[in-house]
Every structure is written in structure tokens, then in C-alpha cells.
Length: 312
Image (cartoon, rainbow, N blue to C red; front, side, top):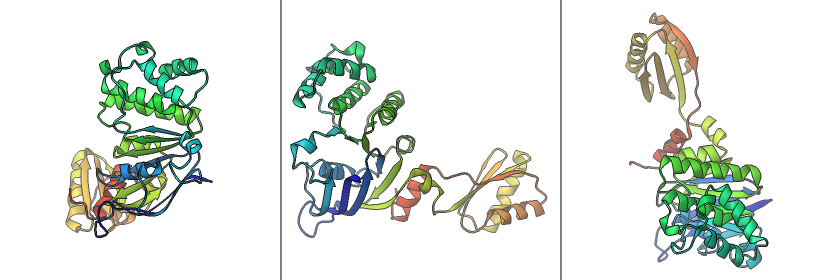
């Protein structure tokens, strides 16, 4: 059963002639999934998450969370955890006080034990009595994550969880989310434009651009799916690789050709692997290895958004 569902979700700000921020969005997310919602800034990701939380109402379409309308029932709202890009932490509080305040709002039992465990879990046990105003951006992000799960939610909404973090802090947050996925059977909905983060964390993704979902599937299926073929050929040495690239460019049937040491990578729909190998062998080149490496999520993403008219 889907715990998050959107059917023809449309959201428009302004008059009837305004361009929709979200245009007939369809989502179905099962319990226990780690779902990634990808898209450039301004694509409509944050608007979607605010509608799913019941903070905004759709202009058209149907949205259900746990089978109900978001925000209408307190018992359903209490099953959601949220970490928005602006965490809204009170700098005057200590880490412990912040978590205790939110645990009290949710009526959590045995608050002290749970808070101590969470502070240990996010690596802030030694800062339990430190004022939040003294924390780094990464520490605040980790505390915000602890706050979002203090009441043991069934769904966790994360809006750009690594925004503004340096690489080390991004890694820490990612490891925390991976641990959550392993140890707690919760559904995680991640809004992000960090492709590496999504590829490492998510079981399934949707790519949103200009208010519409352009692709939705597992990361692996998208990487293996439709798009330009990619063939990598390793030759005997770098000079032969350079010659091979020149020969392939002369044929003019491939979209992209690059050389990396003794390897040539050819991308396009104009030639297949047997044709490439035959052409290089006939030219007297020594081929050591031929393989079809899977496309990265980054390549898939940019293929999709470029097809939709992105020029930047």
C-alpha cells in the first residue's frame, strides 16, 4: 500500500493564466522506501513537500498521506518527521533542550533516555549542553535530523539535507540517513539536487523539471535504460588510443568521443560495439578490452533535462 500518493497534482500561484509550479504530478511511494526527488532549483521540489505536509493545498488533483488528506488529522501529522532546508532551531537553546522541547510536544515517553540516545546517534553527545548558536552548519543539520526523528515517525521528509554543508559534513549526514534506513523501517522522502547523495541513498527516484516529472524509476533501471549507448575501448597504449579517437571522429557518427590514457570512450546512437571494434582492428590497432560501462546518475539526469530544453 502506498503511504504517499499524488494523482494529477497541480499547483499554481497567481491567476488562472499563471504557469503551474507543479503540473499533473503523479507519485506512489511504498512504506520503507528511500525515495529521491531530483531537480534543479526552482523545479517545484519544495512546493511538493509542503503540499505533502499539508502546509499548502493543491490547485488541482488528489494528495494522500497514509490514505488521508495531509494536515487534516493530528494523529496522521504526528507520524511525520520533517527537516526543511531552514531547520528553524533556536540558537538560545542547548541541544538537549531543543530535543526535549520537541519530544514534549509529541508526548514522547522516557524523553531523557531517548534524547541521550539520539545525541549519541548523531554524534552530538559531548555537545548536549552547548548552545545551538555556537554550532557549525553541519552540527545544526545533525541536530535538526535528530529533532525530526525524536518521535519515531513513519515518514521522514528531508528538504535538501546536505544544503550548505562541506563534503565532510555531507558524508556524516549521508551515513546517518543510511543508518536510519537500515535500523528503522521508515519511509524517507528526500528533496535534493545533489546527485551523488541521491544515488547512494535512494532505492527509487523521480526527476522533476519545470513542474513535471520527466522520469521515475529505480536508479539502476534509469542508468541501464534508454539513452545513448556508451562503449569503452582499451588499446595497447595511449598513442593507439589517440589514433582510435581520430578514426572514430572522422566517421562522424558518434555524439561524443573522449580519450583517457589508453582508453577511448564513445557515446552515441550511430555505431554499435561490433562496428567500432571492426573499424579499429582494420586500422591495425591492438584492442585489449571492450566494455559497456553503466551511465552515471549524473549522465542520466543531464540527458533528461537537456532533452527538456535546459541550456544552462
